Length: 378
Image 1 (tube, rainbow, N blue to C red):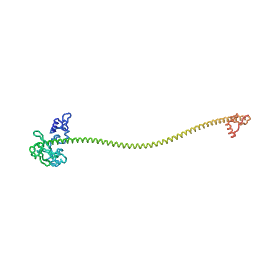
Image 2 (image 1 turned 90 degrees about the horizontal axis):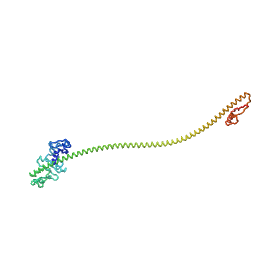
Image 3 (image 1 turned 30 degrees about the vertical axis):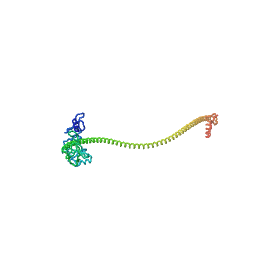
Image 4 (image 1 turned 180 degrees about the vertical axis):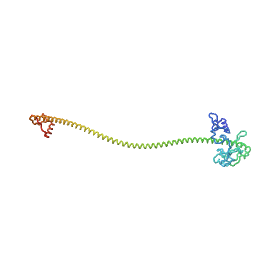
């Protein structure tokens, strides 16, 4: 069935790896054809690291001989059907006891001319095989003694690969021919099974590799995002530290400003109190100045009045002196003319006999100085 599918894919011109058309169609991709007539894309074939065909394992290079993985023996080899590892007849059961893989198939049965067989280590016997009789009826075949017939189940002595015995020793010629056919079929089945297992292993290996690659890319993106977040966190911590430092400085500055404000408030109150005192003093001084100005005005007015009185007195004295001088001149003139002069004490300027207060003062001053009285002519 697998080969037929691959042939159909080849007829359709599709790559058996990615199932896309190699030529034609909506997408045209360059391809290459091998000696086995299988066609692949260059990109799909480049992923295959071996020199054989990825589908049929055909290769122009001779394959190296199989050998036991434990001791290196190249004869009497058995292939583990589960994992595909090769061991000799002495180490295949040890592999079963170690891994629990029960089925082992003989390697190189075709080359040696022996029928391929599959041994079941768990049940200590061959794997059940179906044969087709002449009538077309499938019956179970089991190797037994030389007297056994085809289509009948008979007990047989279990064959252990570690014994190194050939199971054909217990079979007749017909049974040997049928056994060879069955073993050839089993070998072909095991070969296809190993190919499918290898293809699955490589397929899932590629899937695992792609998954690891995608997960690695995701992890790198996540790590980059985490590193970016860490950088942002470090920057935020640095900014927070700077903000805390600035906050501390602002608090200290606020305290200093509060102290300065309190000092300014106290100074303001002191200045207001001092200003109030100065204003009170200024008002008192203004009142005293106003009072002094009023007193000076009154004093000036009084002095002006006294000066006016003095001026009047002086004017009167001057008038009296003029009158006195005039009278004396007249008396002197009369004396010169032979007239009689009579001494009369008369106050200058007052011929009517009315003596004022100022005149009395002047008269007293004159008497104190001994001034002579006026002389009047008769």
